[in-house]
Image (tube, rainbow, N blue to C red; front, top):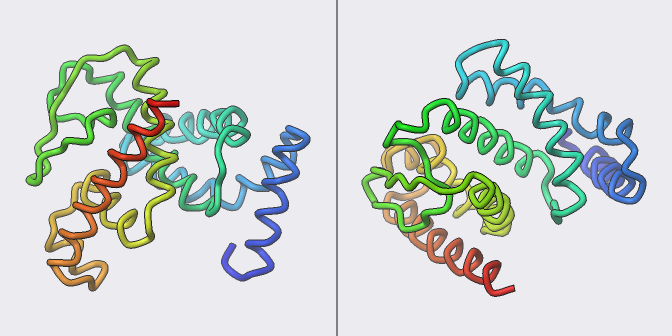
Length: 191
């Protein structure tokens, strides 16, 4: 979905689903993106059957999460949700692995080395939902750089090459995004 009519139709389907909880409407909204979700899942899970299962599990997550979240750009939000779902699946499979991504820790080191904390997975899921919502609120450049750096594990130079942002801008976007995400997450805790 790329032109204005498609985007308006997508927003209308989203509103109608929120009002009615009609799964047919959600299916119409999700169907054009299923191949993209499958691609993301295959990239992370590296297994066709697991990726297919994840596509269905993400649809089930949408039933629960869409009514709770304000979604401005469904495609971007779904992409982040899909990545996060796969990363959580990988964490469940590899709990002892120390280099897995910890979404609750926003004090990430600049070189991309990640800290690992054993936490209750219910708390992690809450933090993941908050973080997903906070990422969606970032400015486009910040969101893009954060996703490329932390989720795709790209270097600053790789981000510069793929986005054509200057190296200093990439670093600045990531630093500002981290600050904004921390503030957003702290606001969520105060409520």
